[in-house]
Length: 611
Image (cartoon, rainbow, N blue to C red; front, side, top):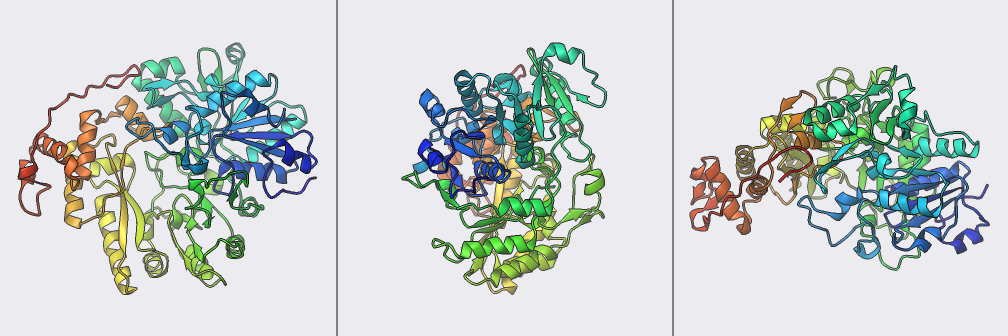
């Protein structure tokens, strides 16, 4: 077995130096290769190598040049293809469908990946290496594993396995799956019945299959034409995304049938520790002559856990990492911090200690192990089965602060404020020691009907947290602020709701740089609502802001910007709130800037188009 190299090989010369004539697995990614545990290619490559397989990396190949895909030859077992850490369409376009000029995951920030990278790469590999197995993975493949609404084409697209020529798809966090796939292929076995994967089977074979025990959801032709069918399909497969109680889900397409097997079981603490203790260099491959911008904000961060039970409607984590929290041991995390302290570039600041939500570290539910996460309710601090003590994280943070070479330990990944309120001592602790001026929180909105559809806590919870954090900061003798993330244009939100939020921003004097226009990304409840006008969990109709209304809603949340005043005035008039156009601090805009703009009607209809 060849020991783990400083970097996974990217060239034939590196392979020769390691004595590798033929790689077992070749990873193709739309990101630059950064050997850091925040980058999926690095984790998957290190895990496969640790399991005894040699791994090469082809990062950001030019899809127009076959030689870029031929540089490492044919792998013995399979190609693994990923668009990178971000869906390639989200990475390439703004919510308003304007092409971005930069890519944080590329050297020098210059875009180097194609749109729909997974499909483009897979087609190129299949044409060059017929007969070699292809496995899709990463966020783009994971969240497009069923028929889905695609914001950028404004249509319902097939499951990605129906478009990309591949033998299997890994969804979720893929360490268990890729090792099992490698073992199966090495033994000459097929790739069916692997948890955490999806495959296709021929239509003729499916007709002979007994679907007992499976969940058959409406097929692609049906969901493309019917919003009700789309919503039913989403609700059905969403209920099966639990590793304990999830069942196999099947969706038919015109030329094939997509079969998703139940999610992979969570990694236990020992295995998770081992994954993060592999010898990552925390650096970009030395062949790059320019920095990879995405590395800088995470280079000296520490992942403490996986999973998020918040289940926000607009977030895909439920379908990717799952709701069950998987935490590392304090010993493993402390050992990683000690390794950071030995690095020449480390300046004594641990940039972040957390996960999808920092304060879920060490939190558990007594039902998860045997029954999984509840299918009919979201986890909340009010549930008697959820252990909400933050003692484990507080103890960990205190121990990290005492390490030699560590000056500061920050929490940058944000916290779940309703959960923090269940343990006020935790708020005191982070306010005193772990906030670098601003603390990220994500109320997203404050109008009740909007937060309900978002599956977020209401305004009164955020108000309690604001007051508690302000008191904790005063107690610590510090002037600190909350940095709230707010969202405009979410399904269910009206102009009146946006005005309510704008007044709240004004009255509470909140800093509103972080306003995100709702982006319909694949496989979320909110995207289903946006595409169909139906809440899939209740089958009730939902207002969907589009066109001019979306522009007005965003402008209202940024009413201080002079260029938004025309849109703000238009929205205020539509809502009958002319009282907010005038003079004085209580108004959203002064009267002298009242320049109404021509109203454009925004119409909506199904059948894959939104005008």
